[in-house]
Length: 303
Ligand SMILES: O=C(O)CCC(=O)C(=O)O
Image (cartoon, rainbow, N blue to C red; front, side, top):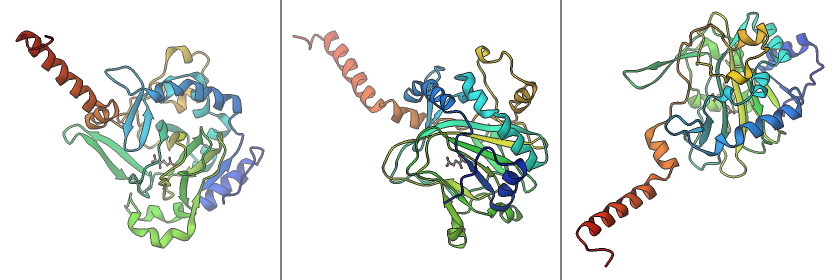
C-alpha cells in the first residue's frame, strides 16, 4: 500500500517522493466541503446523456464523461488550480505547467472493459480525415497527472507501476500490456480510499484504472498538467459566472488567451449514444406509431 503523506509535508520531501516512486498521495488536501459541493454540481449532468447540445455525459465503454467538466462550478476550478498542488507540480517539473487534458468521469463495473497499461507523455491530435485521435509518445515530456477520488473507492482504483517513470520514457511505447510480467511486482493499487483522496503521479509512470466486475461506480476528477514547452491541449470551456477574481496563476493554468491544440476527449460515438438512450425501444415505438397511422389511414384501426 502507498504511504500516506500529510499536506504539511515539506515541498522538497513531497517532490522527492515523486522522484523516487513516481507518485504521491494526499488525504484532506482539498477541503471536504469542496468535494461535497463538486458532487452536488455534477450529479444531475452525470445522469443525462449529452444530446443535441444539452450538456450531460458522454458515454465511452463503461465510463460516463461529464461534458465541459470545468464549467459546472467555481469549486471545480478551485480543485484544478489548488495552489499547493500547482506549487508541488512546478517544483517537481522545474517548469511552469498548464492544464492540457481534464475530465470528470464515473466508471461502472464491467466484466469485459479493460483500460490498457499506458503512459501519457504524448500528444494527441485529432485527425479530421481519419475521424480519430492520433497519439504520439513525446520522450522529452515530463509532467503530472492529478486524480481526485470524488467517491469512496473500494475497487477499480488507479494502479501505478512504482518507479516506472525512471525507465518507461527510454522507449517510444505508449501501451505496455505486453510487458506486464516484467512489472507485476511493482504495481501499486489505490483501492479502499476515501473520497477526497488526491493522487499525483509523473505521467511517464505506467498506469491504468484497475478493471472491476462488481461493486459501486467510481467517480473521479482527472487533470493532466504539462510543461510549458508542450502543446496547450484541450479547449477549456468555463461559465462566465465563475470568472470573477481568478488569480493570474489560475488563468495561466487554465490557458487563458491560448489557442487549444486539440479537441475535447472523448468524442462520443453515435452507436454509444443510441445504446445509452435505448433507441431500440424508441425505434420500436416509432414503428408502432407508423403502423397505427397507416392503419388509421386505411381505416384498419381502431375499428
Ligand atoms: O482513472 C484512472 O484510474 C486512470 C485514468 C487514466 O489513466 C486515463 O484516463 O488515462
